View (cartoon, rainbow, N blue to C red):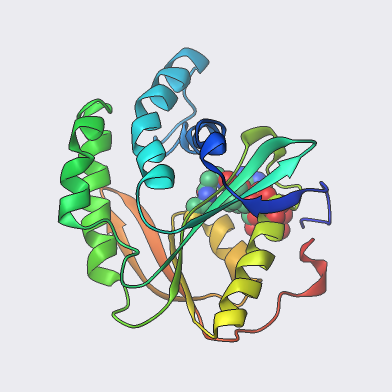
Length: 211
Ligand SMILES: CC(C)(COP(=O)(O)OP(=O)(O)OC[C@H]1O[C@@H](n2cnc3c(N)ncnc32)[C@H](O)[C@@H]1OP(=O)(O)O)[C@@H](O)C(=O)NCCC(=O)NCCS
């Protein structure tokens, strides 16, 4: 169970933070969705290839990105986008194509299919969408993701909007459930399950033991 753990300051990402925030996202996703751990050289290569995609998401697509800082260093990143601009549109997808082509073969194909399936499942009604939420690898499990999610709940409750997200591990599902998200659907995409989760407007408050 996560505890209060690391003490972080949460603030809006500024232009000067883009590279550092992108690197956190790259590291958090650098070993996924491959089925087994990658050796460090392959992982670094994969992180470099993911960089333009994540940089575009955080720097050019709509939404507000919040960063969690520990002693000045960015250790967590959460992008929040209001419907209907929350899914990558075909035009934005095309703009990202050069970056995607640089990504390892099946990764870019999976990314495209995944985005299409997510777009199909996206609730066609107002909501605040989390995409992505990440914590730097060596600091995961210390309550930082929970602190970012608590901030998300404040944002959502402040606007009386429901929340929505896609996720791909049972551990993540359990984390989001603690913040009032419920599973509303799932899809298997190239052998991996993605869950779709909805948090009703003014959803239940996080339980006190989530950090
Ligand atoms: C998912 C993630 C943002 C959670 O942030 P966190 O700071 O690690 O989470 P917290 O410490 O606040 O909460 C811990 C809970 O998160 C869940 N969790 C998911 N991935 C985890 C991980 N790699 N390490 C630890 N907990 C994880 C578990 O439910 C855990 O609860 P438990 O201790 O009872 O098992 C972070 O682990 C991460 O960046 N993972 C990789 C990228 C990712 O999957 N992002 C989410 C995409 S939807």
